[in-house]
Image 1 (cartoon, rainbow, N blue to C red):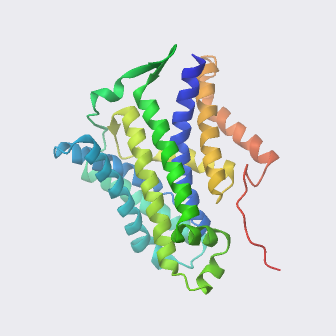
Image 2 (image 1 turned 120 degrees about the horizontal axis):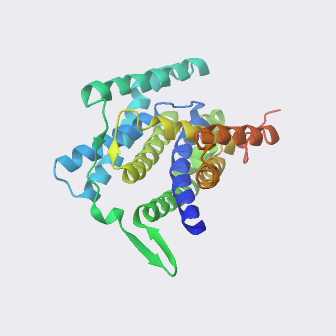
Length: 293
């Protein structure tokens, strides 16, 4: 029982970590909290549904859905956020809310306001045994995909020229621009990566629920934002740590809370978040910032 709860916690934490990392990548470079990130999840879910209805094999449908989320993130940056570059934080925040609301209306009126069932492969609902433990295929895939995605992103940021430029931009964007590195390329790459992470998280989220609806991305992205704040807003390692921490806390509370307190689970989680921030106001792993004298 304990092993199963640990697996569930890591599985849920991995989804939050992917989403929080997508938010943190954009914030670390642009200073924008993109609340339309949840709609990238929803778009990926509907793209998966459409691809399956067109008869694509499940792996190909997943690839199409993730690519759609990534391309939509780049288009979002080019159409909505690039014209606002240099605007105040309030203006950027209002823009992200406007994009989020617009996409919700499009999904509700252009597709359906009701949840749509997604036909998942039968093998995803199976399970396998390791010793005395039985592990569901879905949670196992969620853990593996989350870990591989985080490792791949870390390698990209550490080993590639663009990744190095992005890490430098996260610390001091003005100096990076003075060195001749195109700002548009760095920012577009940040949004592309955030879209890829949102697409992957959407696939894991849909796989566990077998449905998609216009508000699918709201709750997970809200919790991912909380995870990013707890980890240290703008800190990539902090986003990962905060995502896994939030997932562990949620699952443990769900397993241990008495029935009378179960409806207050989210309130208890948020109280824990407040407690963490009281002790470490900058988050668990604060973002590195260059201090100019």
